[in-house]
Length: 534
Image (cartoon, rainbow, N blue to C red):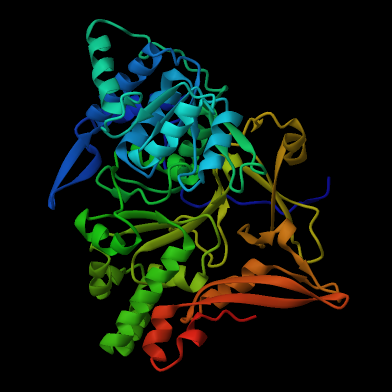
């Protein structure tokens, strides 16, 4: 195998962390250390009266134990149970109850159309499905037609469909069983090496692969991330990324391992309000959202005419930082207050972030880092921390992960391959696909990148997405998309090769930012506003 032999460094600061054998140990440890910390804060909207429920770590574990006991009593021991719905407390309880003693969890994308939900249930041989009420019509149809392998339909909400099991009725039943001495769930053995999570990769169900993950996979990733980033039991995390993605679910487990309080977003339009409402200190999101937030900050600065003041503040704070004096959060208090006042830490993942945006947030005193990984790697392989940031890079490998560049070209760019305890068991019922990506113990990511002289890793694009022009030039569309998306009037873009004669014409499709266009060019016709150009 042809490898880039450049030696990778590890990050300077490595925090202490506890290694856990399984996810039940993670939860037990948190309950022992932070029993009365709020694991979740739930907003209740009742006839426009807003109230909040605080769920302590102790209460969270009790609900998991009750549900797990009831699910085993239903006959679901060792079975596959799907979960579908938006991020919510009941999703988290279901997930941990299933994997910590009942069976195998099969999280499903909440955006799947009906036929793909049906296909996913059948492909995974799910015996039960736990869902929120927005799926009740679909589930009723599946139940009536007997079109899936699922025999039990469990609704997270109280609705009047008698053929559904009620989530909270099961909690009550489990409590009764526990009180009479039932220990089937509490004493259930967990093999950390076995598949306990079955996750479909993105894409249509017919093409998507089902990734098999174990407790060991997830626990190793939690341990490694704890060594890279510092979390406090006073932190508040807004659980924004969907739990059916490993970035969302493993991230939640990482925060739960550290006594963090978790809250839920009311929707994209309410992010700023929610940041302030819950005094959020940690926000994990995707680059597109972070870039939109940064554009909004810049827009507000322009509106108030404080560009000169901000630029002067940035120069002063930058010079003082060279002497170890950090006054960023004082200088830019107004900007931070607009983001809730408590935001200290942002993690961006899923795609590369524009380095100007990351640099901008860090300059304001909000530590902003990014990581890189895949569903198949539970998910994080590479990450930054506040001591090791090189803009444009995704950082260094986690402490228990090995990274190499496979078959690099003359520029040092090749496929990123990885080895570590977080790499999946394989693809479910797909030995050929597993053999394609797991070769001699190394997982082939399909992503291209390079390592600089200091060991920082840079992602340049997808192996399959590279545009090769007739002159032999390799174009990595993701790099150009970042530059285009940085333009104030652009919301999204896609760079691609358009066939022309016997070559490819480098092209871009652009979705304009309608609000920006309306404000800057109020007299432009609607036809021109809505038009996309190549």
